[in-house]
Length: 160
Image (tube, rainbow, N blue to C red; front, side):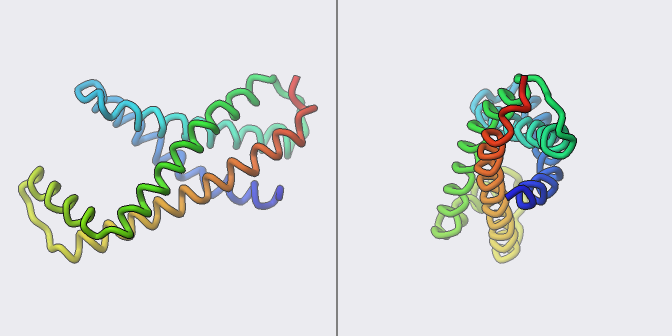
């Protein structure tokens, strides 16, 4: 269990970098469009979860140090939001992959917004690859969160 948590933590670090950059860009966009603020909050909390769980791995599990109780609180609070965010991502990706009409509608909306039409096969294929990647990240994140909750219970004596 510990080896899987360690491996998944290192896999999720580049995801945290990408989500962090997307969160910063999303914050700027949220100033003009308040409807995206919820997704910005979800990606920000997921970024914070990945970073704080990595700190938990480094400081508590590997270094065997006693840390403040606030680290546990940060991990747990952001884990719940990240769990919701990744579950939503998993369900939405599955819905898009199983219903090609969604992809066609999205393709028409993008073509209208940008005024540039790209070949339908290229767009459809790139969307499928992106959706499969999002599903994989969501599955890895949900697995990581469940392992993290178990390890937080196991290392509860290391929080003061």
